[in-house]
Length: 158
Ligand code: MG
Image (cartoon, rainbow, N blue to C red; front, side, top):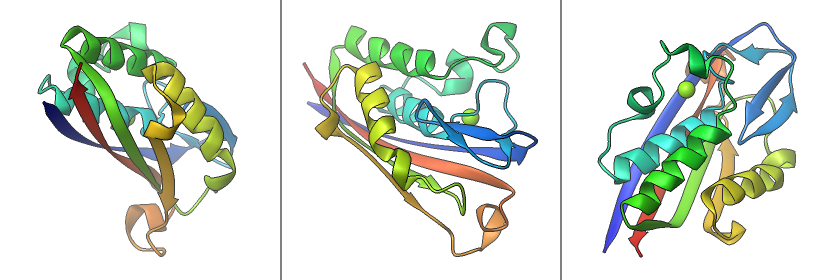
């Protein structure tokens, strides 16, 4: 028995000198405006897991109105999502995440992101894919107003 889920997340750029992607601090001339650390990779991945379980979305599990999640390290969200999947009898089959941004360049950080995500999900790294694309300067990502990520996961009944 398998279940599939998809997730999507966007954050706008603001003042700052880095962004956090997949738990990796990536130097950049802008930061991301967010209640938490604005990690679009992990937010999209969490939503994909919640979606596969049909258990709502990240805003339901970690409301942005809750002061507990202010400047939160999003990796705790991912560990929560993984624990929830396990409690419902599922393990991660694989996950595939696409970062959508003109900048910063993601490629040099992909391996470190995959290591973080695999650690938080308790799976082998070869089950985790992180890749990146631009939007050829089109749209809000193309204008560098913000960045986005989308994720797909497959959960397998244990
Ligand atoms: Mg988000």
